[in-house]
Amino acid sequence: MSTAADPTGSAPVLELRGVTVRFGSVAALSRVSLALRAGEVTCVLGENGSGKSTLVAVLSGLQRPVEGELLLDGQPVRLRSPQQARSRGIATVWQDLAIAPLMSVWRNFFLGAEPTRGTWPFRRLDVGRAEEIAGREMARVGVTGLDPGQPASALQAGERQSLAIARALHFGARVLVIDEPTAPMTVAQRALVLQSVVAARDAGLAVLFVTHSPQYAHLVGDRFLLLGGGRVAGDLTREDVDLEDLTRLVAGGDELSLLTGHLRAAHPDR
Ligand SMILES: Nc1ncnc2c1ncn2[C@@H]1O[C@H](COP(=O)(O)OP(=O)(O)OP(=O)(O)O)[C@@H](O)[C@H]1O
Image (cartoon, rainbow, N blue to C red; front, side, top):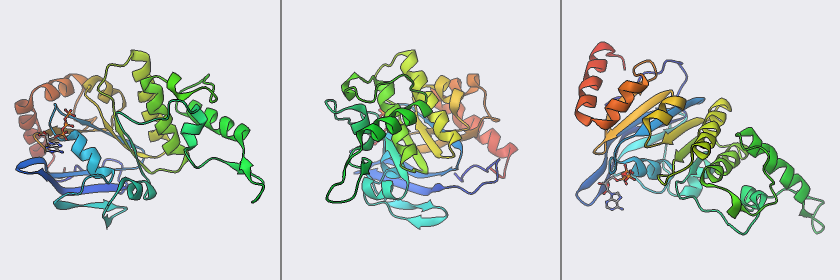
C-alpha cells in the first residue's frame, strides 16, 4: 500500500517504504509503508500480534528489516542501534521504560547529560539548574507541581512516560515514538500521556503513538495506521473516520479492509 497523501503538504521527516521483518517463517511486518511528518501525530492501532512492537523496534534501531527502506529527511538511512536512532533525532518511549527508581526525577531526566558549572578541573554539577530545567520541562508536557528532587520511584506510569517525552523534547528529538503501556493506568495517568503527546506535536515533533485504545487515538491522532497480521490494513486521516468508525475498524479486520478499499477508490491519489 502506498503512503497516504499529505493534507499539509509538508515533506515527511521519517518514512518507511515497503518494510518487511520476518522471524523465521512469520512475517511480523509485510511491506509496511508510512510517513511521519512534523507537527503530526500518527496513531498505530491493531490487535495483539499485528506488528506494532515490531514497527516500534524498526523505527528505534532495534530491528533491521529484511526488505524495504527508511528515509530520514528524504535520504535513505540504516539504523543499526537505538543509540544511532537517538543520535539521528529519533527518540523512543518504551512501554516498560526503564528508570532508575532510587535516583531523583532530575537525575533520570538528564541521565549523564547533567548541566555543570565552572571549568575543568573545577567543573561541578549544577543541581539547582538541573532541578529547575527538569521541573520546567515536565510542566511543559503537563506534569505540574512535581518536586524534581523526589525519587523517580514515586512517579506513576503516565508520569514516567511524560518524563521520557519531556526528555526527548529537551534534547532536541525530531521524531518521537511512543509505545503506550498495556498495563492498566488511571484515567488521570492516561490523560498525562495524551497531554505529553500533544505537547510534543505542538513543539513540531513527528509523533508515532502506539495505543490499544481507539478512543485515546481519536483524541490526539491526525492520522491512523491500522495494522492487521503485519500489514497496513488502513492508513486514514481524521477526515476519513470519526470515533465510531475507528472503534469499529479496530474491532473488525474484515470491515476495515473493505472500508480501506472504498476510500482508496474514492481518493486514488492516497
Ligand atoms: N522475537 C520474535 N521471535 C519470533 N516471533 C516474533 C518475535 N517478535 C514478534 N514475533 C511475532 O511477530 C508478530 C508481530 O508481533 P508484535 O509483537 O510486533 O505484535 P504487537 O502488535 O506488538 O502485539 P502486542 O499488542 O501483543 O504487543 C507476532 O506473530 C509475534 O508472535
